[in-house]
Amino acid sequence: MQSIISGILIGGIYGLVSMGLSLIFGVMRIVNFAHGELVMLAMYGTFFGVTLLSMDPFLTIVLTAPLLFLIGVAIQKYFVQSLIGPNDTPQLLLTVGISLLLQNIVLILFTADHRSLFTDYAIVYYNVGGISINKAQLYAFIVALLCSAAMSLFLTRTDMGKALRATVNDLEMAELVGIDTKKIYMIAFGIGAMLAGIGGSALMSYYPANPTVGHQFLVIAFVSVVMAGMGNALGAFISGMIIGVIQQLTATYIAVDMQNVAIFVLFILLLVFRPNGIFSRKAGARI
Amino acid sequence: MKHRNAIFLAVLLVLFLMLPWFTSNYILGVVIRIFMFAALALAWNIIGGFGGQLAFGNASFFGIGAYAAAIGFSTYSISPWIGMLIGGVLAVILSLIIGYPSFRLRGIYFSLCTFAFSLILEVLARHYISFTGGDMGISVPLLGNAPAQFQFESGVPFYYIGLLMVILYVAVCRWIQVSKFGYYLSALRNDQEAAEALGIPSPRIKMYAFMINAFLTALVGTFYVQYTLFIDPQTAFGMNMSVQILLVAIAGGVGHLWGPVVGAFTLVTLGEITNYYLGASIPGIDLIVYAIFLIIIVKALPNGMVGLFQQANRLFSRG
Image 1 (cartoon, each protein chain N blue to C red):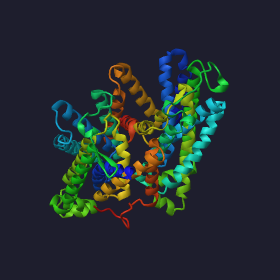
Image 2 (image 1 turned 60 degrees about the horizontal axis):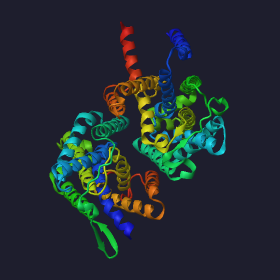
Image 3 (image 1 turned 90 degrees about the vertical axis):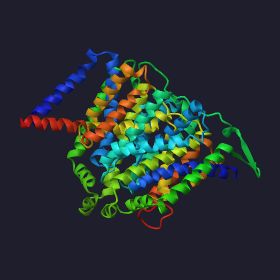
Image 4 (image 1 turned 120 degrees about the horizontal axis):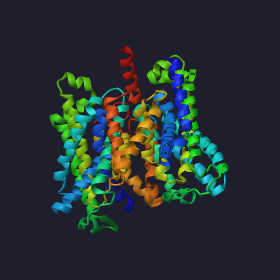
């Protein structure tokens, strides 16, 4: 039970990061290999927000979220836009390049040292019916939940969200009815990066940062996106939580260092048997 | 034209054969690295270039080759020459296991699936410490000059073995290019549906290409471990290895016979120069240079360096 609860709590963050990747992957079919680095950048942002400006770690989101949004828009506008086409290879390589670039710039600027925050969030535990819950993990989970709820409302209730979903469903049709799809692409990448950033900032409250920390989130996010089905952002959030639980259970009952093997195997099985995700009954993307 | 190319290649070969007499050990080491990456990229080019299947987990095969030789020698006292073959065979078996599910997928999904397998191998290599040494890796016992055990005191024998390897790999690629098998592959790359409609057994052809790629990549893995006498999970199966193999092949020119060689020469030299001048003061700068190079290649030179040469050549001959 303890592992299930911890799994759900950490899974909330995975879910948020995955939701971000889902927007990028689902809307633009861009396999964003730099997604983990966006999480990493936000973690460093929060670290310096707390240590230099003595902000509350969760409050730094008001800084990191808009920053990451801008970074996402810039990546889309200056790097990815011209490469969108039938062939996936160029944009995959490009995002690998961006990922390497960000990783090593951070390495040069801030060294390879692990950075962690020593706030009371990380050390306070609540005891609920024999299950101990870390304060930082709980708050991070609540942030993730709120953001994903806001995201769902945005996608279903606002004109912008509807335009975004229309672009996912049928790019040409969306263009025909007058949607500026280039703008939508930039916004989608921006929001995707922003969600990764919020996830990273929340995570920083209890998880140490280093230049290569993003790698693990990248793979987890890919698994959730594939599990949910292309473009199913809400599904990606739920899948993220499922993956958190699977990871914790493997860590508890098999071995801590094997916790990701179960996820990778699951990934391969999903790719082969349910490439459209576990939530969809037939082919076709949806949000 | 054909005649001129043959003379050019012959001169180049003689130059490379004589190189160890003229250069320092440092330069020799750099050229050996160039050979290794050229060989890795040549192998990848068979499935990724000729076949157009963007395999993203070639580190799996490299790592198997490296570990087969290292474990075989240090635990079971098997000569690495035999370990090399064992590694190659294991890699072919592994390529069947990876290829069977992966080839049911296309494009990006294929890449992700092959990538996932390399991640699994990395975790397994970390976990089974008694077998692989875990994160500490395996240090191959130093024997001095022992040709029967694939160990040499100087870099010169490694240089010639590396050169031979590159020549053989180019020959294999050339043979594939002009064979029926190669035409099947390029037909698949251009239009899988049309190729299948013409009766080309696409799953089998792709699998053969993947198996050849796996075997050749594993041999380089053994070469690497004998040359450096050390292997760990990160070097063997890590994402960086897969990315670097791809990078070399793509920088040179995907699907072109000489692309991987040109790519290895350019990238390794570039990396060495940056490391030589800046590496000591700024760690990671070589990877930044790689990354920028990769972004420029993708944005500006979709056909790689070879494409650039061809364009220049065309301009010249037009006069």
